[in-house]
Length: 217
Image (cartoon, rainbow, N blue to C red; front, side, top):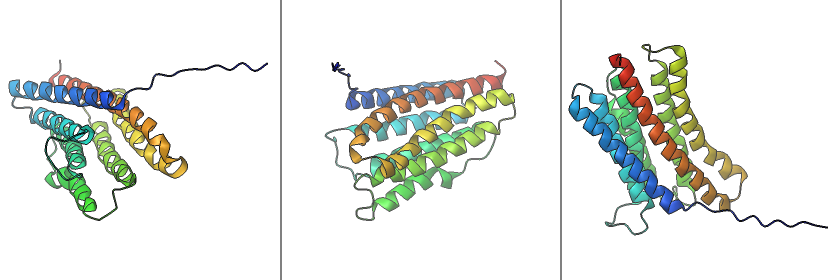
């Protein structure tokens, strides 16, 4: 006797998740900007808040089914990579290190340059390029957090885990592109969007905890 069990799974709606991610990133950006306006001496808050708002704009443009204005298709990705560079420099600024302007824009510039080559970002190749750019920035962010000497080794390690996991998630498309058929992309995008929401909240939490530790709160 064969027992057939029909399990109906509720698929998470990707557009809805994308909207939630955009709203959370935008809200966190506004929160950090307001915090900076109350403490103008902590310029890193302005960098982080602006990065969240720019990243939210990029995600909104990328997930919008009918764009309000016609923009080149590489613009959303460029905004997201610019946000990554700003977060990295915000971490450096918070640690008392100088800002690297070229490093802020290099990811976005690379994306825009590659986008000018016909066919390079088509057929899922754009995900592969993005999966290479974002982890580089994220690992640098993790490195800056690890160099923080005002906290214990345990607390530094805990702060590094979040960006490292985010970078690892971004590297998954490389393996999927090589090993799995293309129809798995939709499921992967859903997982990625959920992880992005968690990362946005987790990073903002790390920012605020780091600031409180620096003030001795």
